[in-house]
Length: 299
Image 1 (cartoon, rainbow, N blue to C red):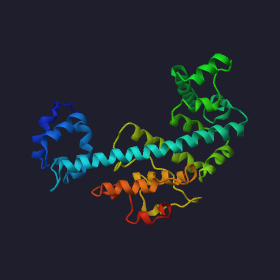
Image 2 (cartoon, rainbow, N blue to C red):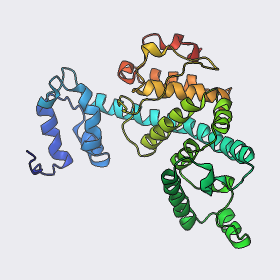
Image 3 (spheres, rainbow, N blue to C red):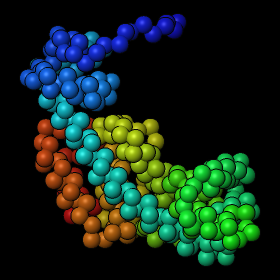
Image 4 (tube, rainbow, N blue to C red):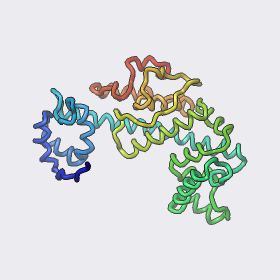
């Protein structure tokens, strides 16, 4: 039986004795109040959780659990999100360009994004078209306004639309295409089969949204499982020792796709530097195998 929520609001300064009473060491209480005020306890509680004893529902902290460790995990997660978001941006831009070029050329139709004849599911197409229309109605981009003022076509060409629609909408259009040969050509540019490419870009959209909305990322178990890569064109990992629900697998996806997008990237070094900066982070909780640096992907 469900019950009504009855917990009162607890102000940051009142949380200090509560947390200390549960066994959390707080060395600098004024600074902790400041963090709780400007970040919020609910957001920080996700980083408190790994420091709780089992059963965690008792809310009793492990020995040596400190507020500094909580903030350490929070800062690491924030820097990890920034790193991943920046690398996903490179992949996203490359995917947008690939779709603009090869799908438009393959179909001989620069307006393919808004033509239902190119798509399998009318329902999915109509949903994506509604998003395109919403973005067109609210955009102030000069190139869209110029097109609408000069041309009679109801929609701009694909390369203009791809600049204003969300990445997820673009991926949804690609996955709904009728023409598997065109999907194969785009995916092949990134060293992937079309089914794996479709699965991976959905996972990247999900990760990008987590990063963009400042959600906890580092130790989250994601229910969305990316497809396995059976025939890699570039160096890859031993998937038998990797949990695809963990962030490490998605980090590997980013590294793999950068092989095409940015062959001389410094992502590996940036990742290693971040892990060195935060040595207390439990990378096993992220899905990193013990010998991850020896995987062909990271060499």
